[in-house]
Image (cartoon, rainbow, N blue to C red; front, side, top):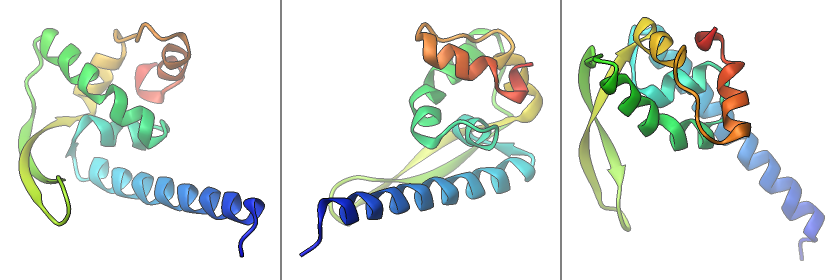
Length: 122
């Protein structure tokens, strides 16, 4: 029977591996030229949960500033069980995201501090 400590250690290793995989995928996507907002944020150093949480707001800010996506792509979104649906995704260049992050500041104080430290926001 596993102890609470070993379950906690396994969870830490699982989370660390998941975050490393997400960061690797994001860096590959960004180096290809265009990528989704979340990929740009993850590649810049935000953890994936925070990047996904704020990617919609950054996209809305980009569109309100008059930016249009460089391209659109598709991705599979998991639904229930083994069911997926294909959704369209806006793909942005690094310069577009840098322009948006220069003016975007979330209302959440901790998140605003994280966004201020991003290399693209400077």
